[in-house]
Length: 312
Image (cartoon, rainbow, N blue to C red; front, side):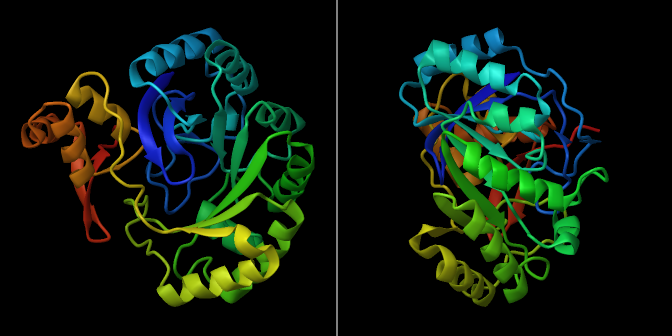
């Protein structure tokens, strides 16, 4: 159980992150574009990974040090709904800390009633929907073999009608995989049913799991956006640019950077800026982390990122 950040979020403002899963990547998908790399434990089994009291204590302590945040966000290195204590942990944090709660889910377990009930504890649910087409879904998300896209989409429809909080969706566009007009039209039909407050389109701007993954072209983005806009109007938004340098520093400089890149690759220029604000020598801290083997500098999309080295 870890609390990290706060970090700037393109959707949620200043977000304090909660990792409610064990170390390593435990997920029901192994998406080709995932910034956390390939999935090491591919599963659909829900287990009690988090401790509600411990989570509330850690978040309370972090908030005292960090100050105001817009959301406390469950965004682990994997799929948060695989934690069977998710709902209870969210309630414990809400009771003790009085903050808005968000969760980023890949939607794969939305067909389960207990998962939809747990998601109902959050003020905002960001549900990933990369495709409404079976073949495309399997190529992009590489799901656990027990999963069925039809069941997932029906679960999302139920979630949209049951959820007391806000539902937004996010679609990651990968050139040549899910970026065609046909993909856009199928997704537009689904999103019209889900009726989210926002439908975000994003691109892999951080280093992906598979090196051959490419962001969509400007033409692909424009076509996709126009198809969705024709059904959803101004609720469609693009998330194609970096989140900006507004990281909120706390704690020891090297430990802070390491806690962020554990689950959130960080642009090198932003890391240097936040380290300067902490009174540290940016080059010395980065060099120390790279030399220790804990962090690597990776180039992607014309920018350099600090990423956590994969545990082997």
